Length: 75
Image (cartoon, rainbow, N blue to C red; front, side):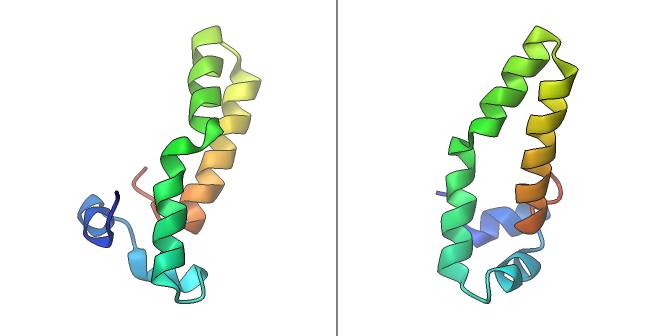
């Protein structure tokens, strides 16, 4: 389970991310801990291996949006 301390040590702005979740820390952590199951990580890997730049862009762009909204900007 990913904790706020883990995220802060990684360089994430957890205060900003929690703020985007209307101050609900539990909800923020629920979203963060759901990230490893995001299908876009697999889609990105598959697209890179296949040399499919368009699909890789789409998957990475989707991940960028999610990670940005959660303020996990180092990733």
